[in-house]
Image 1 (tube, rainbow, N blue to C red):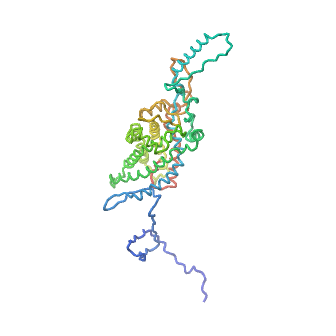
Image 2 (tube, rainbow, N blue to C red):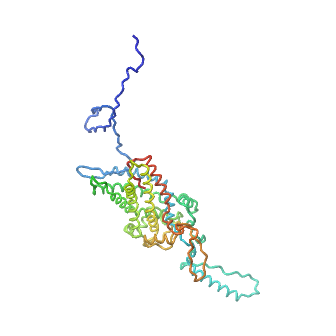
Image 3 (cartoon, rainbow, N blue to C red):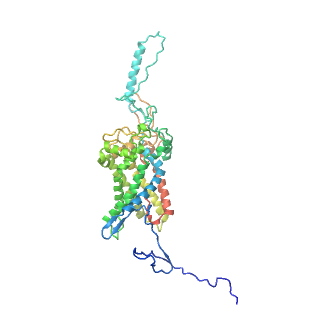
Length: 469
């Protein structure tokens, strides 16, 4: 008679089978009312955006009639999205990049004394003899006070005063940042921002050029890699060759080497309008083409081509080969030793910086040297008065002529007495030599390697492999 009001008796367990099937492709001629047969259970379809602006991996499409062809529309969308993301990321990292490049090109001589001791001593002796002769013929009863003649300073053939030391403030050009002890990148950032002729805005010099380089690099390199893979396919039984990504990075770096030269010049020039060499990237590129050997000189001059070849080869080689060597020698895999894989990635990244940093420093030093008919480039930091003659000469001069801290002022010696090098007493051999000059920004790069490796391990894609910096 009476029925229970509970719904428990009418409950039936639903079908718990989950099936994942792609949505059926509906021909354009078929009517919208036609429906596909329903699959049992729950059907999941994957929606793909037809125009992904932020799909930053342009790929090659395959057509049965024409073979491999380039998706121009997708490449343009990828380029726009990459440029937007790169501009924001580059603006954040630009102050550290500017400080690192200025530290790399800064000349830090081991001895900060005079470069013309012999000539100055001879000049002072002549002046002292002239003053003694005048005192001999002077009337001792004269009441008018006599003053010694003003001390003359050594000048060059054009009448300019010759600097005795890089630590001398009176003869330092106004656009050159004073040479002081700089403990890392952050210290250099504060020095640039506080200098009256530079300021905070100088930390973003070359921002547009850097963004263009990063955008073109991330767009061109994957396309070149896919083209090389399609031309030189690897067998299915063997792993893909590491030479293909290394070659794609090398070709991309060589193609963009003139833009890298423009970026270095824009960063290293003074922010003062009357001492500024270039007004922008277009003006810098036109001046380089006009006065420094044309397009051929920008690509194939030995002081530009050889450092670019070494830098763009050592970096991808270390990024791709070192992780493989560490994994094969130790036998660790992500499945069995996940934490050791992360630790191995950190070691590989630090070793990459150890290998690449000297080549990068030498490349920056050679990039700021004027060539051809161009006037001498005025950098906002101290640079070597004499040019380097190549990669080997630059690296040898940096190690033997410079030191890792502020140079030492030595006492002036009499005429004919050879100048003595300061003795290495309380300082380490790394501080006394110029090895530290080759590794500016190493701590910053190592910190970035550790941060990216940890983020990739705990929050990234497990199948993405080793993170390339």
